Length: 431
Image (cartoon, rainbow, N blue to C red):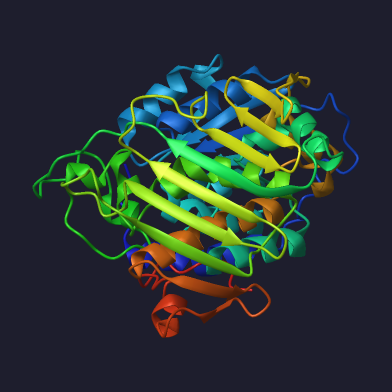
């Protein structure tokens, strides 16, 4: 296995990735038909990435041709699970994968702090991209990702897959048609039990893993098991808490249903009422996104092993004539006279929609376009930002990309809109 240093990364992510921009970007399917076979690669093969391997392999005329992961055990397991296991290429360095001109599309299911850096490099390499939620680790990355996708006319699909749910589409259309009257509030509910993680001592990184490369743009830090598989979600250097992990699905649907983008203000409150361990991120959050004509309310409770609002994680829209609920068990309208109506729609697939847009070479056909997904990701980032600053009411200007008001803490807030990228791990595209 090659062990890449920051110097190696700097050499290849600079001159190497820059040279890839000379490729004929994103036109390989411009004249293609719906039957043309797509060669797909999965970068990051943990729980979500393994799911990507299975899902893309099942799609018609799609072959998972390569997998990439710094953990050799996960990488090998993912490759072995594929129907063409003996032909699957395996990489421990995404940059080497991106040099493979036979790869048409990639999906990114790494830690959050690598989503945008890899997505930008993939765009420059002419690959169409399916990037898991949240698409970015901070607001600055969201803006760059949208700019790059537009500049190079690349299909970039966001992993907020409810956008491709026929049921959710039908529910949102019903809201537009006034099924519950004037909609004044939408609630995004993330309630579940996520058990404590305890406290993990400093230890050696796993055999065969280049831990410095795993850290990438994040600050150098000694290895602990709690900063490794999955639990990285609960550290600000790598993850975005459960608001960015699971809550983003509900925030995205709420924003979609209300028909809004950036709010005029964000009111934040949150902390740890349940955890007393290595967690840095909250177990409890309440955030109000204020708009001119409605409110979007996010509620997160990670200590509840029971369903609320008659379903588990989901959404509730409140109108003048009733309410509409969207959860994993369906979409239901309850009118003020007590009448109940179930809303149904055809089954859809976010990955299938992605490949259809790729074959048409038309980003406008994406259900979860990156310009939509980035706004939902940014709402999560702003909610976390206010929470980290002790519970602030903040105002953000999406035109300038700056926090304009934050209780006198504007400088701190704006610093959290981006991050310091370690030398050698700078972003491949900077606008």
